[in-house]
Length: 141
Image 1 (cartoon, rainbow, N blue to C red):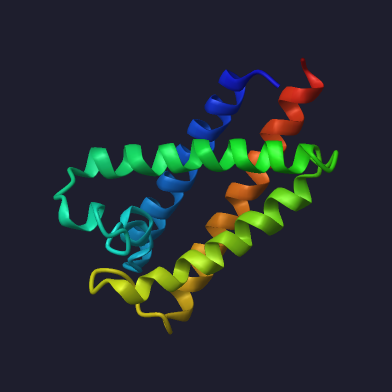
Image 2 (cartoon, one colour):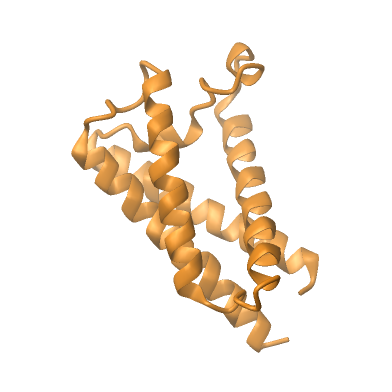
């Protein structure tokens, strides 16, 4: 698959995930968007004051890298067109990343069930979107 198509899938999916978590945070007051932008667990980055736009760009870069890793990783097993795998993997990644909430005072408590539900639901949908876009692009090449 064309690398620029994967970049675009990463950007579109990342914009969606960021937008969804932003809306969920505004609607519910659960700090799920703050958690998405949180870099308190990354030694070098936590020392640098980042503008919200820079935080979001970092999020998009992570999304792009993740799309490449998943696509090429699943391609090795001829499974790059299996949307369910993108959903499962991204939901699991979301579950693991939720643990980083314990590294910051700004993010939800580790025991915050609603924040965890919103977070996992958003990553589930993100996984579905990534997988669906990849399948769509591959079918229309």
